[in-house]
Figure 1: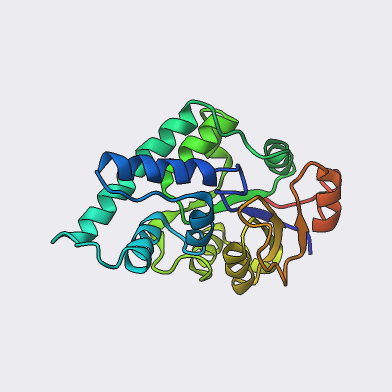
Figure 2: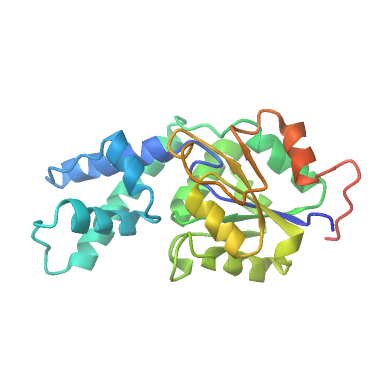
Length: 241
């Protein structure tokens, strides 16, 4: 069965974004007079929780349990996350976060071969759109047939909900798709949805357990090798629109 669609994670997969996220969280905390600082080691632990709002909530409950929560705690967390997103997207627009090796080429060649492209991420739509526009051009969102993001589903990765949401809108069976992820949570999510999942590691995920992955790669520098591993032969690919 030939691959009909590639589904991409975003953070850590399309680009090495996690450090920019960490710095954006810390800038937001400082602006709100919160004496919280997420260093690299702590952020590595916090990344086990997917979703920015969920990560903030987990941090408060686990690391600062004596923090006096405001009356509108949910609104407090939401506003912190909105401010953080604004800082992060500003960093993206400054051009400081390039796409990972050969991501642009993969997207271009897959699209030219007639594959459907989709995104399945826990990050916000603003983050996705800004990253795509910065890395692929102003009209790049149109390259993707489906974009699954943020709070569209109740349960975030490692739950498979976002992949099921994307698959339904693609109208393609899981067995006819492949997913590209960078983390254990992402891998578990893809596998639970029945999708053959490939991993490109980064500094935050290189120690994760990737059992069950179709392949674990440093990146896509050797794109021909990835094509071979994934069974992609774009010179012969015949995919119905």
